[in-house]
Length: 284
Image 1: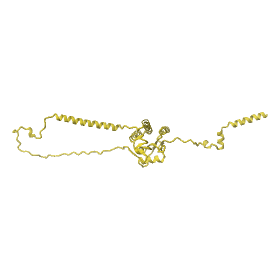
Image 2: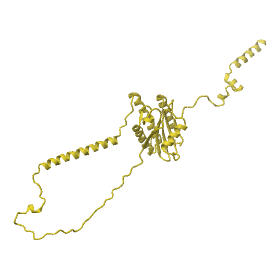
Image 3: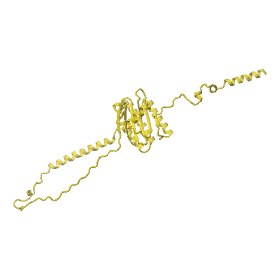
Image 4: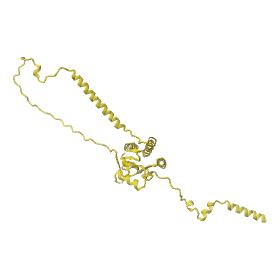
């Protein structure tokens, strides 16, 4: 009988020993912050800031992951903000104020770049902050004005078609290519403006044709020996024509006026720099 009681007590003690410590913590209040749902693990930094709600949860997660990866790789914060409008402010005032108020940027110089899209007012802004921004190049010469403006134009094309995710993806892709090029070559990527290139080529062709035409015409004229006379009398045989009288009569005049239309320009982009910032903006 005593052996049986002893065996039961040993079995009970063994069961008690096998109870997980977490169970005791839950009952005694130890580790209550974990059991209550709170966590000491920090959330992933938000690089995609969708205040307007244009992205699905998967799209936002994808953009945030891509931007976070670039930020970690190059030490430059890559941000995206979609909002409703600029609250009546200029692109420069809004973007710089937002950047500073949210404490964006990495490192001591707060290096970062952000795409801001105001959906209702149809504004796009790309602004960078950090080393070299005062020299119209963002940080350390990685992103020049021409490259930033070219990226903005490509993004605006996607946004104008209503493809919000496409515009944001184009921005992240182009920024990644820009940083990678600088890391590989030690200099900024040169953005080729094909419109200006073709325009320059066209002007050169026109000038060359004009010069060629002038040379040919001069050579042709040099081979002509006959010259037109200035007076009709030079074409009449002498002593065969006698003019009795002559007079001039002013009959009428007619003047045509054509109004020259004023040139008009569309909503092109603009750039600025100063105070550690360098940005470009426009409409889509």
